[in-house]
Image (tube, rainbow, N blue to C red):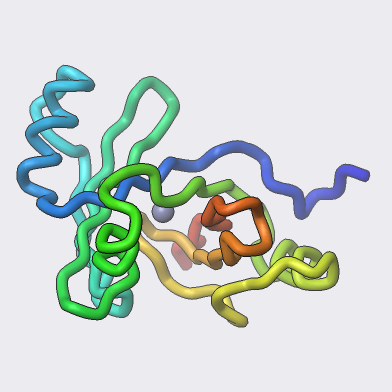
Length: 142
Ligand code: ZN
């Protein structure tokens, strides 16, 4: 059943990197652009992010900024590479409630403020065949 709360499209794909500056150069070459259209630190997650566009698709590069952040741990375990797939949702709280009721493991109980002006929630890869899923909803500017 399709409802208004469903995931509508892939909002971006997240890639874990060790050195954001180097990766910014690499992905600039890959997409033939001068640089990321945005870089942003998410202090609460201890990560630095940058964003590229390929047509209507977005790629987020993520680098950890301290010893204990999730990105550095991920890279230690699995190396650099595909980290998460983010889906755009119109009502993140409703979608979180739906997923929880379906038995998915949410990594945060309340939406968190993520990069790029979004409310975000992560779904544990243990409950999604090894893929970290991010829900994101654009924060409406009052
Ligand atoms: Zn993301």
